[in-house]
Image (cartoon, rainbow, N blue to C red; front, side):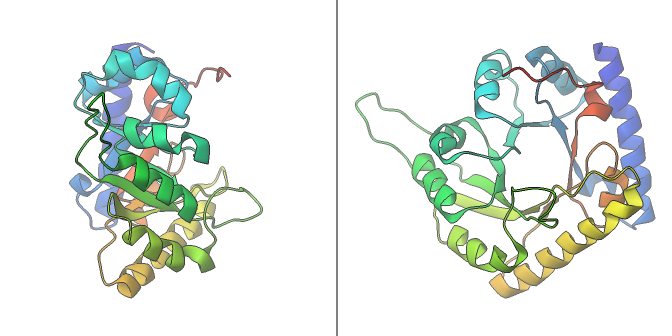
Length: 243
Protein backbone atom coordinates (compact mmCIF):
# COMPACT_ATOMS: atom_id res chain seq x y z
CA UNK A 1 0.00 0.00 0.00
CA UNK A 2 1.53 3.33 -1.08
CA UNK A 3 1.30 6.48 1.00
CA UNK A 4 -1.02 7.88 -1.67
CA UNK A 5 -3.21 4.80 -1.29
CA UNK A 6 -3.43 5.19 2.46
CA UNK A 7 -4.22 8.88 2.13
CA UNK A 8 -6.95 8.17 -0.42
CA UNK A 9 -8.40 5.41 1.74
CA UNK A 10 -8.44 7.78 4.69
CA UNK A 11 -10.25 10.41 2.66
CA UNK A 12 -12.96 7.92 1.68
CA UNK A 13 -13.30 6.64 5.25
CA UNK A 14 -13.69 10.14 6.63
CA UNK A 15 -16.36 10.90 4.05
CA UNK A 16 -18.27 7.79 5.11
CA UNK A 17 -17.83 8.68 8.77
CA UNK A 18 -19.18 12.17 8.12
CA UNK A 19 -22.24 10.84 6.31
CA UNK A 20 -22.95 8.34 9.09
CA UNK A 21 -22.57 11.04 11.72
CA UNK A 22 -24.93 13.27 9.77
CA UNK A 23 -27.58 10.57 9.63
CA UNK A 24 -27.37 10.31 13.42
CA UNK A 25 -27.45 14.06 13.97
CA UNK A 26 -23.88 14.04 15.22
CA UNK A 27 -20.74 15.98 14.34
CA UNK A 28 -17.90 14.04 12.64
CA UNK A 29 -15.48 15.63 15.10
CA UNK A 30 -17.08 13.57 17.86
CA UNK A 31 -15.69 10.34 16.40
CA UNK A 32 -12.04 9.27 16.56
CA UNK A 33 -10.60 7.02 13.89
CA UNK A 34 -8.18 4.50 15.37
CA UNK A 35 -5.95 2.94 12.72
CA UNK A 36 -5.52 -0.76 13.47
CA UNK A 37 -1.90 -1.26 12.50
CA UNK A 38 -1.44 -4.83 13.73
CA UNK A 39 0.69 -6.91 11.32
CA UNK A 40 1.49 -3.81 9.24
CA UNK A 41 5.06 -2.46 9.30
CA UNK A 42 6.10 0.77 10.96
CA UNK A 43 6.34 2.45 7.56
CA UNK A 44 2.57 2.12 7.14
CA UNK A 45 2.01 3.73 10.53
CA UNK A 46 4.20 6.66 9.56
CA UNK A 47 2.41 7.06 6.23
CA UNK A 48 -0.98 7.01 7.91
CA UNK A 49 0.21 9.58 10.43
CA UNK A 50 1.37 11.84 7.62
CA UNK A 51 -2.08 11.43 6.03
CA UNK A 52 -3.73 12.60 9.26
CA UNK A 53 -4.31 9.57 11.53
CA UNK A 54 -3.39 10.27 15.16
CA UNK A 55 -4.52 7.10 16.95
CA UNK A 56 -3.15 3.62 16.29
CA UNK A 57 -3.99 0.22 17.73
CA UNK A 58 -1.99 -2.96 18.12
CA UNK A 59 -3.07 -6.44 19.20
CA UNK A 60 0.12 -7.79 20.71
CA UNK A 61 2.62 -6.31 23.12
CA UNK A 62 5.54 -8.11 21.53
CA UNK A 63 4.71 -6.93 18.01
CA UNK A 64 4.47 -3.34 19.17
CA UNK A 65 7.82 -3.60 20.96
CA UNK A 66 9.37 -4.52 17.64
CA UNK A 67 7.86 -1.54 15.79
CA UNK A 68 7.79 1.31 18.24
CA UNK A 69 11.44 2.30 17.83
CA UNK A 70 10.74 3.34 14.24
CA UNK A 71 7.73 5.53 15.08
CA UNK A 72 8.18 6.63 18.69
CA UNK A 73 8.99 10.15 17.50
CA UNK A 74 5.39 10.53 16.26
CA UNK A 75 3.08 12.44 18.64
CA UNK A 76 0.38 9.79 18.31
CA UNK A 77 -1.78 7.93 20.80
CA UNK A 78 -1.06 4.21 21.04
CA UNK A 79 -3.83 1.74 21.89
CA UNK A 80 -3.73 -1.92 22.83
CA UNK A 81 -6.90 -3.64 21.61
CA UNK A 82 -5.96 -7.31 21.82
CA UNK A 83 -6.47 -9.63 24.77
CA UNK A 84 -3.77 -8.87 27.32
CA UNK A 85 -2.11 -11.70 29.20
CA UNK A 86 -1.39 -10.93 32.84
CA UNK A 87 2.32 -11.64 32.48
CA UNK A 88 2.57 -8.86 29.90
CA UNK A 89 0.58 -6.26 31.84
CA UNK A 90 3.63 -4.42 33.18
CA UNK A 91 5.09 -4.04 29.69
CA UNK A 92 1.77 -2.92 28.25
CA UNK A 93 1.33 -0.28 30.96
CA UNK A 94 4.60 1.34 29.91
CA UNK A 95 4.26 0.94 26.15
CA UNK A 96 0.69 2.10 25.50
CA UNK A 97 -1.38 5.21 26.23
CA UNK A 98 -4.61 3.22 26.28
CA UNK A 99 -5.58 -0.38 27.02
CA UNK A 100 -8.95 -0.82 25.33
CA UNK A 101 -9.54 -4.48 26.16
CA UNK A 102 -9.57 -4.68 29.97
CA UNK A 103 -11.82 -7.45 31.27
CA UNK A 104 -10.36 -8.59 34.59
CA UNK A 105 -9.88 -6.98 38.01
CA UNK A 106 -6.56 -8.71 38.63
CA UNK A 107 -5.25 -7.45 35.31
CA UNK A 108 -6.42 -3.94 36.20
CA UNK A 109 -4.43 -4.10 39.43
CA UNK A 110 -1.32 -5.19 37.54
CA UNK A 111 -1.69 -2.31 35.11
CA UNK A 112 -2.20 0.12 37.98
CA UNK A 113 0.91 -1.04 39.81
CA UNK A 114 3.02 -0.89 36.66
CA UNK A 115 1.84 2.60 35.78
CA UNK A 116 2.72 3.98 39.21
CA UNK A 117 6.05 5.78 39.53
CA UNK A 118 8.90 3.36 40.15
CA UNK A 119 11.82 4.50 42.28
CA UNK A 120 14.93 2.62 41.31
CA UNK A 121 18.63 3.09 41.01
CA UNK A 122 18.18 3.68 37.29
CA UNK A 123 15.77 6.54 38.03
CA UNK A 124 13.18 5.31 35.59
CA UNK A 125 10.56 8.02 35.00
CA UNK A 126 7.26 6.62 33.71
CA UNK A 127 4.58 8.84 32.31
CA UNK A 128 2.76 10.89 34.92
CA UNK A 129 -0.42 10.55 32.89
CA UNK A 130 -2.98 7.97 33.95
CA UNK A 131 -3.44 4.94 31.72
CA UNK A 132 -6.77 5.16 29.96
CA UNK A 133 -8.65 1.89 29.96
CA UNK A 134 -11.85 0.66 28.36
CA UNK A 135 -13.80 -2.32 29.63
CA UNK A 136 -14.35 -4.92 26.93
CA UNK A 137 -17.84 -6.36 27.19
CA UNK A 138 -18.67 -9.84 25.92
CA UNK A 139 -22.01 -9.42 24.18
CA UNK A 140 -22.01 -12.77 22.37
CA UNK A 141 -20.57 -15.45 24.66
CA UNK A 142 -20.61 -18.14 22.01
CA UNK A 143 -18.42 -16.06 19.71
CA UNK A 144 -15.49 -15.04 21.91
CA UNK A 145 -13.80 -15.80 25.19
CA UNK A 146 -12.62 -12.23 25.70
CA UNK A 147 -14.59 -9.57 27.51
CA UNK A 148 -16.48 -9.21 30.77
CA UNK A 149 -20.00 -10.60 31.04
CA UNK A 150 -22.73 -7.97 31.25
CA UNK A 151 -23.71 -9.02 34.78
CA UNK A 152 -20.14 -8.59 36.02
CA UNK A 153 -19.56 -5.20 34.41
CA UNK A 154 -20.64 -2.91 37.31
CA UNK A 155 -18.41 -4.68 39.84
CA UNK A 156 -15.39 -4.48 37.56
CA UNK A 157 -16.02 -0.82 36.79
CA UNK A 158 -16.15 0.04 40.49
CA UNK A 159 -12.87 -1.78 41.13
CA UNK A 160 -11.17 0.03 38.26
CA UNK A 161 -12.39 3.41 39.52
CA UNK A 162 -10.64 2.71 42.82
CA UNK A 163 -7.25 2.32 41.11
CA UNK A 164 -5.40 5.66 41.11
CA UNK A 165 -3.26 5.14 38.00
CA UNK A 166 -6.13 4.09 35.71
CA UNK A 167 -8.64 6.34 33.97
CA UNK A 168 -11.85 4.51 33.07
CA UNK A 169 -12.91 5.99 29.75
CA UNK A 170 -15.82 3.80 28.71
CA UNK A 171 -16.63 0.51 27.00
CA UNK A 172 -15.47 -1.54 24.03
CA UNK A 173 -16.93 -4.53 22.23
CA UNK A 174 -16.04 -6.90 19.41
CA UNK A 175 -19.35 -8.29 18.14
CA UNK A 176 -19.60 -11.38 15.92
CA UNK A 177 -18.43 -10.85 12.36
CA UNK A 178 -21.55 -10.64 10.22
CA UNK A 179 -21.48 -9.59 6.58
CA UNK A 180 -24.64 -7.51 6.95
CA UNK A 181 -23.90 -4.50 9.21
CA UNK A 182 -27.59 -4.28 10.08
CA UNK A 183 -27.30 -7.59 11.87
CA UNK A 184 -24.44 -6.18 13.95
CA UNK A 185 -26.33 -3.02 14.87
CA UNK A 186 -28.13 -4.58 17.89
CA UNK A 187 -24.76 -5.29 19.53
CA UNK A 188 -23.71 -1.67 19.13
CA UNK A 189 -27.03 -0.48 20.52
CA UNK A 190 -26.68 -2.84 23.47
CA UNK A 191 -23.21 -1.52 24.32
CA UNK A 192 -24.50 2.03 24.30
CA UNK A 193 -27.35 1.07 26.60
CA UNK A 194 -24.96 -0.68 28.98
CA UNK A 195 -22.71 2.39 28.99
CA UNK A 196 -25.60 4.71 29.81
CA UNK A 197 -26.84 2.54 32.68
CA UNK A 198 -23.33 2.09 34.06
CA UNK A 199 -22.56 5.81 33.91
CA UNK A 200 -25.72 6.56 35.84
CA UNK A 201 -24.87 3.92 38.43
CA UNK A 202 -21.32 5.24 38.87
CA UNK A 203 -22.41 8.86 38.89
CA UNK A 204 -19.80 9.87 36.33
CA UNK A 205 -19.64 10.13 32.55
CA UNK A 206 -18.18 7.35 30.44
CA UNK A 207 -17.50 9.21 27.25
CA UNK A 208 -15.96 6.48 25.11
CA UNK A 209 -17.74 3.82 23.09
CA UNK A 210 -15.18 1.92 21.01
CA UNK A 211 -17.10 -0.15 18.49
CA UNK A 212 -17.19 -0.68 14.76
CA UNK A 213 -14.55 -1.87 12.31
CA UNK A 214 -13.91 -1.61 8.59
CA UNK A 215 -17.07 -3.44 7.47
CA UNK A 216 -19.57 -2.02 9.99
CA UNK A 217 -18.26 1.28 11.37
CA UNK A 218 -21.07 3.32 9.82
CA UNK A 219 -23.73 1.41 11.76
CA UNK A 220 -21.60 1.79 14.88
CA UNK A 221 -21.41 5.56 14.42
CA UNK A 222 -25.16 5.73 13.95
CA UNK A 223 -25.53 3.88 17.26
CA UNK A 224 -23.20 6.20 19.15
CA UNK A 225 -19.60 5.06 18.63
CA UNK A 226 -17.01 7.64 19.65
CA UNK A 227 -14.07 5.55 18.43
CA UNK A 228 -14.01 3.25 15.40
CA UNK A 229 -11.18 0.79 14.81
CA UNK A 230 -10.24 0.71 11.12
CA UNK A 231 -7.61 -1.61 9.69
CA UNK A 232 -8.26 -3.13 6.27
CA UNK A 233 -10.21 -0.17 4.90
CA UNK A 234 -7.28 2.09 5.77
CA UNK A 235 -4.17 0.00 5.16
CA UNK A 236 -5.45 -2.52 2.62
CA UNK A 237 -5.31 -6.30 2.77
CA UNK A 238 -3.72 -7.50 5.96
CA UNK A 239 -0.47 -9.45 5.64
CA UNK A 240 -0.21 -12.80 7.40
CA UNK A 241 0.60 -12.42 11.08
CA UNK A 242 4.06 -13.48 12.09
CA UNK A 243 4.36 -15.58 15.22
